[in-house]
Image (cartoon, rainbow, N blue to C red; front, side):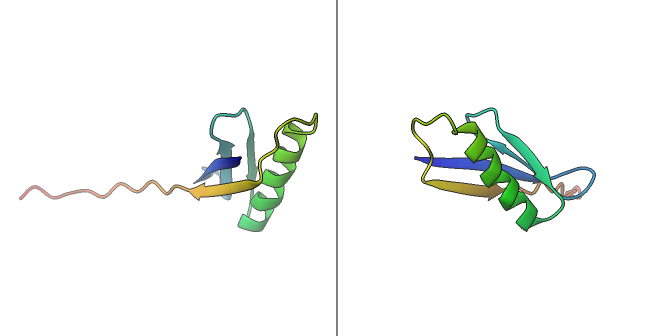
Length: 71
């Protein structure tokens, strides 16, 4: 099983991540901190046993609005 986290820039700086299909959210000031926090969140969420993900994918999404001038 692969678990996907959608990562976005946090409004106050750093990153915000949420697991798709699961109620897991975390944030951090830098990318390495986010990786640690994601792994901790996954460990805590699946600590009761059962199926644990073998891979975690961090999918970074950057929103950018580009104005288009009228031709």
